[in-house]
Length: 268
Image (cartoon, rainbow, N blue to C red; front, side, top):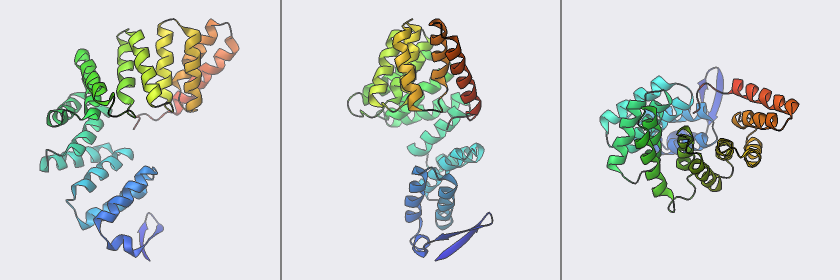
């Protein structure tokens, strides 16, 4: 066995893991990422890059890991360097676009996602994220069109992709197109019935349509799917106020406030 000293603790690694090179490190780092063991995954990918400093897939993975560890500036700089060397690298551009969007750099995010869909018009995830970025710069009609393009691409070919439906539903509610938003949220919930957000959006659209009793079912479903998701509790509180159950309503409002306070500043 070989060992490496990290922050005062000894981590043991099989000699074979260090011996077989960067390819094995990439596989292991991906496995650790899937387990949300981000610091451990970063240590493995750093070893890979010690062996092969310019291995692009490892650099892209490291960029994503740095972002997940809230090291945004480093992540963005790394991915920008990758794209200077390989401007056609869609995975690096997609990751950078998402980071730009999350950091409020919406014009830059638009540029990244537009570059992807120009090169690959069937990149449905990029179309969906382009819709979010276009909304961020106030181009609402273009944002709706981008989400619709994503939906057209996933309607039959990618039945597991629900994000475009949910994202468009949320945008349309802001435009007071609540009936259409409800239909999209239901489709998102059918595609991914484990998503608390999808159920919440369906319930929220129903409240906008003044269909509170029907909304209650969706909101309770949302709250049951994720005990840490704040959003449904506020609308449940409003429903209970309307139905004359003030004490229960106050409990929902308190739950909403507590969960909101515990949320991270930025969703990653």
